Each structure stands twice: as C-alpha cells, then as structure tokens.
Amino acid sequence: MRRLYTTTLGVKAYDAIVVGGGHNGLVTAAYLAKAGKKVAVLERRHVLGGAAVTEEIIPGYKFSRASYVLSLLRPQIANDLELKKHGLKVYHKNYSSYTPISGSKRSLMLGTDKIQNCKQISQFSPKDAQVYLQYKEWMHRMAESIEPLLDSAPVNLHKLTSGSLQARMSALKPLVPLTVAGTSLGKDTPSFLQLCLAPVAKILENWFESDILKSTLAADAITGQMCSPKTQGSGYVLLHHTMGGYNGSETWCFVEGGMGSVSMAIAKAAQLHGAELYTEKPVQQIIVKNNVVEGVLLQDGTVVRAKTVLSNATPKVTFLDLLSDTTLPDDFKRQLANIDYSSPVTKINVALRGLPNFTSSPNTPGNPTPGPHHQCLIFLNCENIESIDEAYLDCQQGEASSRPYIEMCMSSSLDPTLAPEGCHVLSLFTQYTPYQPATGPWNDENKERYCQKVFDCIEEYAPGFKELVVGKEVLTPPDLERIFGLTGGSIFHGSMSLDQLYMFRPIPLNPGYATPIKGLYLCGSGTHPGGGVMGSPGRLAATAVLEDKNCG
Image 1 (cartoon, helix red, strand yellow):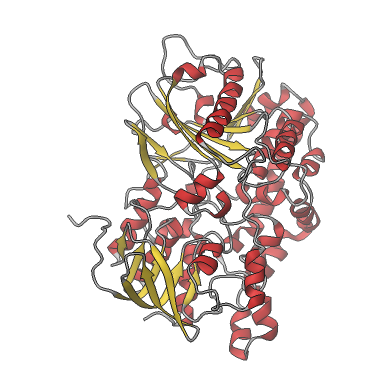
Image 2 (spheres, helix red, strand yellow):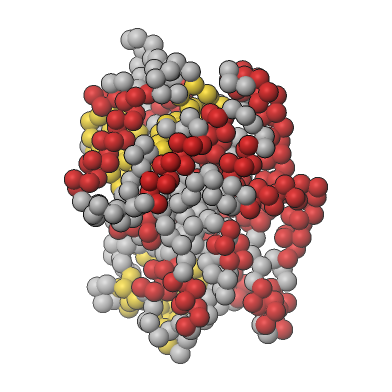
C-alpha cells in the first residue's frame, strides 16, 4: 500500500504547488487534483495537517495538539471529497457547555434539549429561561442568512471599480450571494448590524439578566481573539461560531483519533485524485520572475517548478518571508504590515491518570465513566463578564491574566482511542497571555509559572486535579508561531475583527485569493472566510485558480 505522504520528492515540475499541508492546503490540493491538475503539497513539518494534527507528545496519550473540536467544516467539502469514506468519524454531544461556579455546587450546562436548557437557566433566572429559545432562534436566523457567504468569494471593490472590463465582469459574481444574504436578513438587518458592530456584552445585556448565562454565551465571542466581551465588534465572532454544526449537529464535535483525522481524511481524498503529498519539505522562497510565479526553492536547494503556487501560510509569511522584498508594491506591503495577528492564547495539553472531579458535579465513587459535563466544553473563571474583562485588561498591561479564562475540553471522554483505559487527554485553551510579556520572554520558568496558575484555578473547581496530571505541554503564542507557523500565535491567521473580514481579508487592496503576482494565490485562513477548521479558503482558492485558467 502506498504511503499517504513521503519525504522523497519525485518529479520536480507540477501544474500547481501548495506551500503548507494544513487542512486548507490539503483541500486546495484535493480540488485541483480532482480537476485533473498535477499537484504537489510541500509541508515543512514531519506531519500533515497544520494546526489540525494529532500527536503523541506524551507516551500513550494522543493530543489534538492545536485545534481540538470540529464544527465549521463546510458540508459541501465533506460531501465533494467523501470524507466519511476516507475515515472521518465524529462523536456528537448532547450538551455543548458546562460552566461551574467556583466553590459552589451550582453550575450551568447547556445543550440540545430545550426542556433541559430551560431547567438549567431557571436556576439563575426564570425570565432568561423564557427568552433563551427566542435568542437561539434569532441567532439561527442571522447565521442561516449569511452562512452562504462562507461558501463564496468576497466582493473585490478594487476590481469592481478600477479593473479591466473582464475583471469588472468577474467581480460582479460575488455580488449575487451578498445580495441574497442581505435580502434574507430582511427585518433582522438592524439587529444583525448591531451584533457585528457592538460589544457582545451589550448584545447579551439586551437579552438576559443572569451573569453566568451571559458570560457562557460570550465565551464564543472571545475564543482566540485579543478582545474582551466589552470590545466593539466582538459580536461577529459569536455569530461565526454559531454557524458551526458539522453533519447536522447543533454542538461542536469530537473527531475520532483527534483532529489529525480530519486532515488525514482530506489528504486521502487528495491522494486518491492524484495529488502528491510531501513532508519535511520547507520552502525557502517562492520564485518570481517579471511578476510571474515560476515555482519554489526548498531549503535544501531543490527547485520545484510550477505555473501556479498556492500558499497555505499566513499572509505575513507568504508575502514578507517567502518573497523577495522588491516583488510587491509599497502600498501593498504597508497594508500587509498592518494586519493584526495578536493572539491571547496559550494552549496547554495535559495527560491525566483519571477523571477530574468537579465540586458542582461530583463523580460517582468507583465509577470511572465520564459524565455528560465531562463531554462538554467546560468554561472556568467564566461566572461573569467582568471576570473575563479583567483577565483581558491584565494582558493589555503586558501581563498574563492573574485569573485566566479557561476552556477545558476532554475529547477522551467520548473517544477511547486517545488515552490508556481510565486515563484522559485534556485540552486547556487559556486566555489571556501576551506574545511578549512585560516581565520577560516566555522561557521555561515563566511558562511553568503560568501553567501552575492555570492548574491552581482548576483546583478551585475540581479539587485533586493536580494529582491526576501525568504530563503536560505548554504552548504560548511564540510556540504556536514557531511550531505551526501561526504568525503572532493567531489561530485564525489574523484577527477576525470587522476590519479584517470579507472584502478586507487579507487586506482591502487585495481581498480573496489571487495576488498581484501572476500565478500566486493564498489558500489559508488569512483569506475569506477566515479561521476555524472549515476548508472554505482552500476550496475557494482552488476555484479561483480554475476559473483563472492559470493552472497547467
């Protein structure tokens, strides 16, 4: 049986080269290969998948080392590439979130059951319980209206207003789904605009009175973003995550075998159609002559030729690291230099010898079976919006949060393939940590100090947690950048703020996938529609290449 990927480069000329084997790059390769193009994927690391990887960093424990849950993957991609056939299997959850209260036996657990949601919320506010369903329906209407924009290229105003006649005609196409989305919103348009422009805290204040419900819902608005629930425009990220629900699920899913299984399923689809996948092939430079792509130069000196190169790297790495400094216009470089890559995230992967025992939902003595709350996304230091805002403000002073916001995820609670029997893998997605702390760089001592601060917080909710720890890995923003190529540690390849979305992504001068260099395209999350294990940037980039008839 042929290996899924290899380190030995075969031929050195292709129709298209994809720089970076993250999930979007693999999607791009699969679609181009399916269209009959000869494609090579060149991945820097020893494993495919980018941030969607599974790695056994502690013996016996398999971690979704960076991204850790699945929901945003577009149905069209899953169907077109037959990902189930290629081994993609997910575990659906009945409950989505669990927010315990420190030092208390009370908690809030939300999920798909309307009656149970009502009971849970009624503990804190009968009034909120009555309006929660209306809120969910409102969010669903708006998500349903704009979700088609995730599957279409953004409007390019520059081409629409100043391009050639052919370019202008081509630029009209994205106006159709945009018009449909606007029409579909209808009477919800004012509230949609407020959701996108206002702080999510204000939006939730308009709906609810219970602190714990507001903070639980606000969590989706700050995930991976250097912002507070009180930051203007934070509402859009809440909507972005609301659009998730892989394979008909209303909640985020766990992938059997970890998130690397998503990338492997896409890789198998790409290989089935003839794409060649290579690891340990770091690209040193994208070769350009007379503003036309000619291929890439590898770090080992090998030149690989292609008329089309698609970069799955961030815009910063693509344009400022892999291209000659004289290749791009000055105004283009200025906008590139101003992309916001700030990240508040430190990811901690933890191997556990047993099940955390929460004061608010105690384990059954002698029963090692995880409860429903263990299968949720667990929000700690999240009892109210003020506590999240305080954690954010610490970071704005150049310090790691004194009480970090913590999102716990224990995928082994449903997937037994990830850890030894009775043991578990735990993902801690923590905020807020600066890229460069005011007290000094993220050396081993500072990382350990921050990790113990996080563990101390968890101990308040689940006494005895520290005794369960077998091993751990702490990934600060510089670590996420170094290992996964995430500039600034940004999991989205750039902030999902309003000034960096849709027709402004990656930059206003050049929204979308084609670049000023003929034959060079972007296919990563730094393009529309942005971050998450979604695949849309990859598919839309492949579509752009095929429509440009610039490949092969």
